[in-house]
Image 1: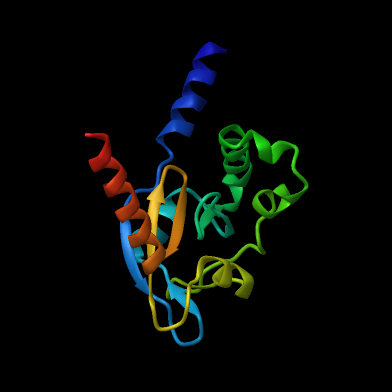
Image 2: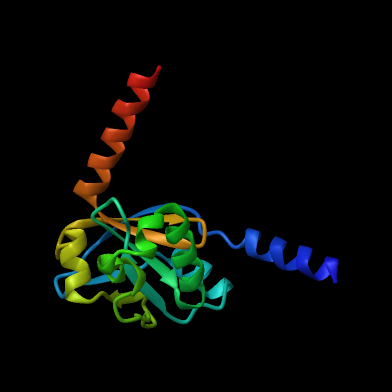
Length: 156
């Protein structure tokens, strides 16, 4: 019995998306997921992804539907306030799940795009983080990177 639990923990731990990708939002507001992202999703048997809000940032989390509960547990642990606040539903309930077509294109709900400031004909950034992806507008991503760099330099 102990071997099984170790194996399942190892399998859970080995589930990790990696990489940073720049994508262009098409004129019809669709995004073409990079081939590497689609491959990583398929390798982990994902059929759809849930877009949700990323706390503390104007960005989206794109989480395979079979891992959404894991995401919820992670943010509840990181932000205990979400366990009790009425407004927590905004972070704990995803927008409608999205799939991708044969060319890897996804269409995010309008409100999700608006929340993250993702606009047609602009660049968006996809970052693999553990068992989900983050989707950022290029401006928001670069602003956060600069904030982090400034904080790092001040801490030296």
